[in-house]
Image 1: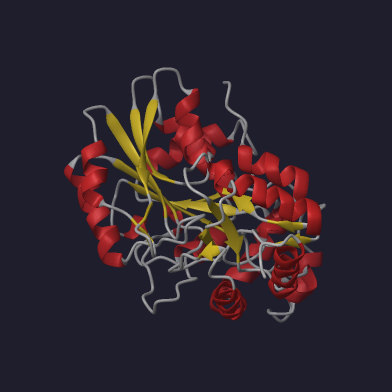
Image 2: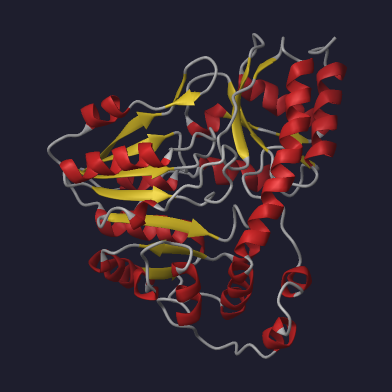
Length: 375
């Protein structure tokens, strides 16, 4: 297959490990293996005794059971462990999409959610836009239903959304499921930021409420353990999972035994790790709110309902890509312009999940004054 360049990952390939002030990261603060193992008595010795042979293609049975425990209705048989969320997204889209199919993708979104459709001859996709109403990000379900065609096969969503921070309420997710059920559509629900809600409403996993849905989770984002490269697909539709596992045989085949072990430790302490991430984000949100209050003539911020990222508007008469390039060139402050998403408007993604956000935000403010944007 031939597939287009992954713009976001290519962009990070240039700057992620060279720019000193990463103010756009979509993951939460990580930790060392020692810190993680300290959460569970006896786990360090267990880790050292971990057998380093092949693992089961579906994933460690105990881990699958622990992941199932995050859901209301899932069992271990409904869970497939994947090599990060990316493998799950790529495998699912490849086994689901055929020539002549049409899919709808919430947009903006992670590029692999829709790029596979572009690579399948005769397959097409439509964008269900997250829109700026001047104060916040919104979606229109009537617009979604109007996008459905006779050959529409699936809808792909990402909630909490990266990059906007828009998040379905449970009632909105149910409305989405009702639309899918009405039109007999599959639903692919990327929920890698589940557990990082700030409005007091705990969100359900979509797959708990719809038999033709696959929910995606990962250790990278809300848990801040991206180095484990471990995620999962959850679904009551075992026929789809069987097709995905057959595709996985041409990819990772199986997952890392040390990563599966460490993920089990982490998920046994899921609430603790999520609370840690939320505390960091909420602290950084306060600093960012103060920052934007000081620079109302430069930015028009957009709040996020959940997750560690927001998509803010630059109000200067200057292309956002040029502004972001200047910030990283002059002060090493990395932001992600909307152009990376091929999304119209002068928006940029800012990340709130890292412990060094205060330092990065201070450098960003220095940049504003030194370049004459702030007075």
